[in-house]
Image (cartoon, rainbow, N blue to C red; front, top):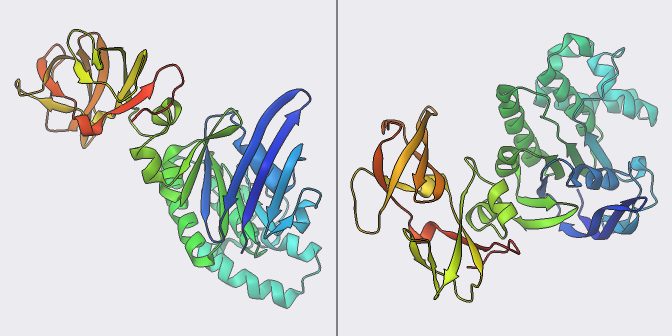
Length: 350
């Protein structure tokens, strides 16, 4: 397989700059996920790697070779699209092998490659069917098989699971992870779904407005988000945020009193994940009074909406802890679970 390197990559449409000074090195065999909201530039960046979009500025290297002016077919890549992109008049077999046939690969070699690919993806019994006879999940498997049979240097996935239902997404997510390990491939995967990113990635590249917001392992970004954007985008349910003015080295609002991070000035945004909020039946040391506004049953857990002074926040509690709207209780915000951000810049403070 191969390394992929982006050096000061830029993409402009006229005067509109959608990717700016993008720098990234992807190691051989690494699975990197470009994660971010719609319009952040992740799919545009992937298409530049594939050669489907021109690069306005900077250099793209695959395996150490500059690719800016090379055709897509000369880059050693294979791409799996969101919409499958299968030929409706061709059988599954022909859809998978068509690219090899066009490049003059012999029939014996095609068959040698085809058998392990369709076996790995459970497609052997569908080889003579047309795409219209397949489910969405089966069609996406065909698209993955078409990419695999090319034995590319780099696999590119552009939101491949977004058209599938939740159950199928889960199954195919596991299959993609298994195939990546089996093939020892270099893979770049684009998604807006944080669950896909957290479960598949060796490293997540979180993007926002055409630039890298934060880069790291799923554990690093979840445990220590570098910005307010990262803290709000990663994690389900969403992180709670509360704003405070720094007064005398502390965060105060009449009810809550916490030490401010060193050097903090002006306004600070405090973050805590719902699973870190401790819900207590009675007052205890360091606890705060709170009022239950809503209690949602989520199976093994409940998501509770709380009012604590002037702040609204969510807490995730075990399902057996049934609470009533209007119930008064106490909560504790463990200091080792708190995240501090500069409200104006959005940057992490601690």
